Image 1: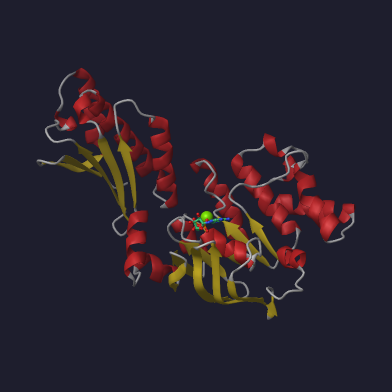
Image 2 (image 1 turned 120 degrees about the vertical axis):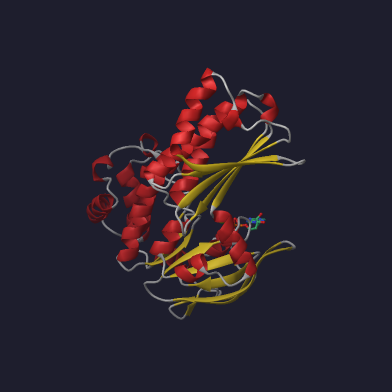
Length: 363
Ligand code: ADP
Ligand code: MG
């Protein structure tokens, strides 16, 4: 369905895409993962001609879309894109957002567009919100409207560019569920995503991009469980941990919690384990705040998928106390909470830093 050969893209002297060749079959769901700044968005934008490629060829069902006389509007309609930042028209109602382009560009009658629009809103679970303004919706709902709007153009291929990365962790799953549903309906989709668990179960193939090339590709299992090449391995390993540098005792606990929640939801960590982890982080930090010399403090959450174990690593300057051995009444309550949810812990001291490793009980 899509055949890309030797695609390249430069911005001035910057070679963002270098010699990318790949074929996507009809009905395939391909996830694209990789570090940021690697050219994933540029790749999608080139396929959709939002960016003009510098070299190579792109064929859709055999038609060379880079040929001089291509009808770009038509190609974009066949290959619609969903962005990270929704891009809804805020002065139009939800339904009007869905009917505008089909009437203007596909030549549908207003009634036909409306009927189809309502059907699509139903598909994404938002039928009763048709008369709302986008600003009255949550981020997750806005993105579902954006997906419905994309479908209203009856595309054959949908390109998703990190459709959930602007969302709060609590709203990610509603959007992913909608995309899963589309995948089951046999639409051809390319999805740039950081949601590894989602990529694993929705895609037929995963492309790992690094520095402007497709560095490794394979079935989800091959890429996630036994990546062959070094950079892929390092990337996958890094996805299993979440690192936070806390410079002083004054910090934003809520933002930290949200980041950890996001990490847990990406890895589909169970609810109970997730709650325990957040509780543990909070208590350990509370205990550390009692002794200001504990900062700067580095927190790392590691998730071992094979054993389904969560580990919290807390690194503090040398000479600090083990917070789990603090005394006093305040410490007492926190400690009881912590010891209830811990499998075991280790405290290692060295001249450079102290390391407290906490292993959560398996749920
Ligand atoms: P990713 O989506 O993998 O994070 P991008 O495709 O957004 O990566 O960007 C890849 C590189 O191209 C980055 O270094 C980015 O700064 C650069 N880049 C992207 N768009 C432009 C542009 N319009 N002009 C100049 N540089 C750009
Ligand atoms: Mg991007």
